[in-house]
Length: 418
Ligand code: AMP
Image 1 (cartoon, helix red, strand yellow):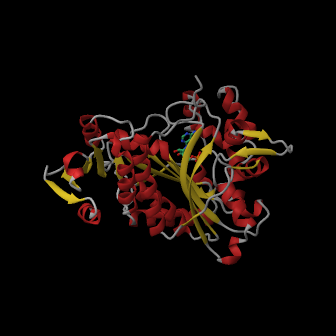
Image 2: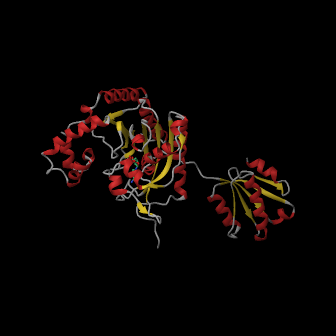
């Protein structure tokens, strides 16, 4: 039997209503904050992600779905959106049209991670990027939007964690301090962390190894090594978050896996989804646009994983799913009336009603079972003596009440249904 690829998942009709609620909430809240949707291709040149996200990050070094196409180009299925949005921003000179571009997206992403609860190989993110301002209020806006979306989905068990990674100069100086701190402990840290020591030393803070964690508890903290500019902006972030009634924790160990972040970074954690508990993450990236060849353009963004959010919603039982109903089921008492039923269904469907009828030549009893299963609000019976007399019965399934209509006056029926 052919099966879906490991780490990918079909989203079946019964799961769609929850997805629609998430997508609708995301769209509504981004609209409230005046973000405009952007859609970019599913694949890009491999170089874009390698350069943008950073060669030494987990995503680029281990997880990308890269392939060579028939023309010999190395292409990659997008593992995240920021690099693609920045590419589109530069390519279409969006910065010339308006100084600040506030953009959002909802899109599948692809990473070849080890499949486990909370980690799949095709997953979906929504997120936002504000490109063109270094206003710290945009940093807070990102956290607010993410928080409002999660709250609107009924989630309660949330923790907002914030940190500042400083500007590149202060971060480089800080990395030297961490290197000094670890230089005599290199043989005590895990093999994975030893690799990170040379390539991406701050990622050692993300190590899941208990011994590494114990060692890193005593490491110098980035917040004690911030430049003044980053320190001041971090103070404003904290003050403004308090003003917005968002409880947060300062987490000096929050370094995030991607290279391009500067100053504010944040994550929102759920207490209800197991070990892969980050629902979303983001931060400022003031140098990515120029790194891709654009003008210096400060920016900030975040991305959230829809599957993890849905898992949190399920575990917190927070979503009120709408009851799926149809307006009308047309039951035929006689198979010779198939053509008539087909015509009637089209008539009512064109009146913007949701209509179903039987295609399987089932008995009237079975058709009624189907009408009940579909939670039809009304059933129209076509056939029998009534049909010969030029009328049909309409049954209101909620009240049980029945009405007779002339077959040539069906506008009356549709008026009743609306
Ligand atoms: P990142 O782009 O790595 O900062 O991830 C942002 C969010 O996307 C995470 O907080 C998760 O909710 C989600 N996410 C990242 N990787 C995966 C994955 N492999 N499977 C499912 N969700 C993911």
